[in-house]
Image (cartoon, rainbow, N blue to C red; front, side, top):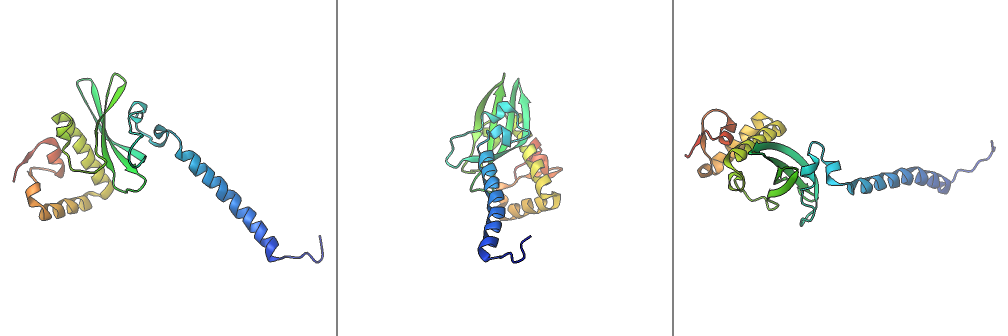
Length: 179
């Protein structure tokens, strides 16, 4: 032990720098490395066949995807995914169909336009996927907050809402009547 060990700002700075920058550099390398993993490694719950069909070449890269729901009709499986880009908090709808292990992109709406699913998939599939989307939103927001948002939207744009019997999800299963 040295009796007159000198502590200078420079020596303290070197120790702090070594202790701070090394974990920071390792963390950044891991983050960058994980960013280049294939999408299916980043999207738990999405079948590999479906992951391969998630668009890679988009205007803004898709950084995350979530499986919302699925439906099967006549040997074809349809999957509704919520996809997220780097600069957007709002998801974009993506519908992928899989037949005999082959996938095809049925619907991708990066602009977020309101397009009814029934215009791109059979009616029964559209109902099931819409119901899955409602369930996800109710789970995410909670029943009361979701109901509040629907009521708020209906009061602002009453011409675009339907009168439904039963639950809020009645629209998804076809129990609605025009206003």
